[in-house]
Image (spheres, rainbow, N blue to C red):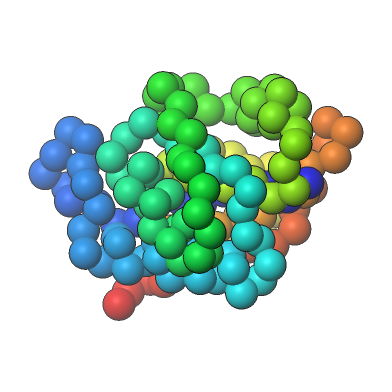
Length: 148
């Protein structure tokens, strides 16, 4: 199975749980279009419970032109580990392509461990991984946009 991990789009800096800026909305919609154009159309979507990731997930799904619900996980961005994701995916293995809307720490961890030569993590960056029999492998990446 395929799992696309996407960092949330650009946010307002003055809030504790910031929303996406208009640029962040455009970035995440563009990332969704990239996912669709590369055949990574999700059957299932998970997101952390912050406003920025939930909004990003909604835009990603819109960009993929797919109608699916966002499954919100009630957890801190620093509690997301590869072990947790492996358990989550193993318990929900009836999908072909999954989408996980997350934060920079998880994407940096995945990039450093599996794809050190992939593009740097920016807002709305995507890292696509293949998962099979408990093993993760790098598949693809989209760097997002440095500026609009």
